[in-house]
Amino acid sequence: MTQRARTAILISGRGSNMAALLAAAADPAYPAEIALVLSNREDAAGLELARSHGIPTAVVESRVFGRDRAAFERAMEAELHGHGVRLVALAGFMRVLTEGFVARWQDRLVNIHPSLLPAFPGLDTHARALAAGVRLHGCTVHLVRPGVDDGPILAQAAVPVLPDDTEATLAARVLAQEHRLYPAALAWLAAGRVRVEGAVARIAAQTAEGVLANPLPLPAPLPTSGARG
Ligand code: GAR
Image: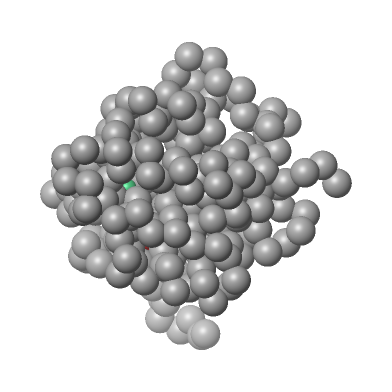
């Protein structure tokens, strides 16, 4: 087999997307190998999970660097290079990266965002989707560009917004799709199947696998009188 792409996952918290990527990469046939989980917070719950899987971890506390984002990123890059990392996957990493960092990792830096971009970049996406009354919501995996939650889209999954949804129920429905979508999209990047043309990412040999639309099944029709079941 050709060499798997050594990948770092950057987290700030819970790490459920990280866990989905670790699970996918546990298969030796998966084209990315997780070489490092790096957190900007020592208390990120995902760190413990990564350690329990025997994955190398590092903490570069962003707090310590104050406003000096370049110094913070230099410290992170020392870890990335030290672990021979070629790809970086942001998974709930809640720091905005500088243009310099994004340029140095151009087309090797990928992010998951909990909305159907370009709708709802930034924070509180589920509350904003509910407030806007959209009927479809979802998640996006994209290559990172300097703008917040901007960059060529690799994959999206859509879910319905249901009339009685709360922020929590909608977030949970989206998160389940994030866990399917991110491993698929990272695999395309790691396998060298992504070609960028301006603002658009093309995936080589892509079939319908790239279009993950996931509406829930329609509710069963109400039973008519005499119906059994
Ligand atoms: C995920 O929903 C991810 O899409 C989102 O943070 C959550 C992290 O959860 N990321 C962003 O909002 C980035 N703009 P996780 O730590 O359980 O993966």
